[in-house]
Length: 117
Image 1 (cartoon, helix red, strand yellow):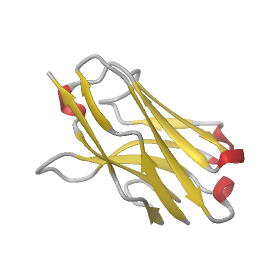
Image 2: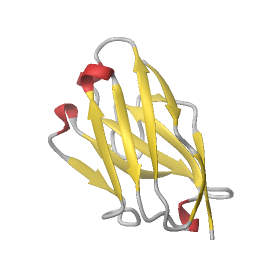
Image 3: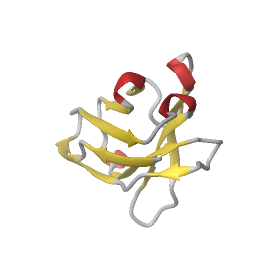
Image 4: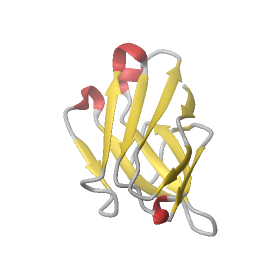
């Protein structure tokens, strides 16, 4: 599985962005998909994941209520809608397939999100 994330950019605090991650290859629908992020000087951290079929989702406490993960299996794409962005959300965001806790089987190249105060 190859993953390509897009949608990052510069936004003011309080603004919104939607990240997309397109997957190539078959069996996209069989993977638990997720988003992680890595801020400068920090370790990569879990942001959100979504089950096969999209029936359940989970979020890091720091983004709960502000971010929403979703998937469209017909388009082999997973999304991360980010609202009420804060400067501390600034990071490179990575999508992942086959998420298991803090690890995953496949990783995409990241997309940079910068939130200005």
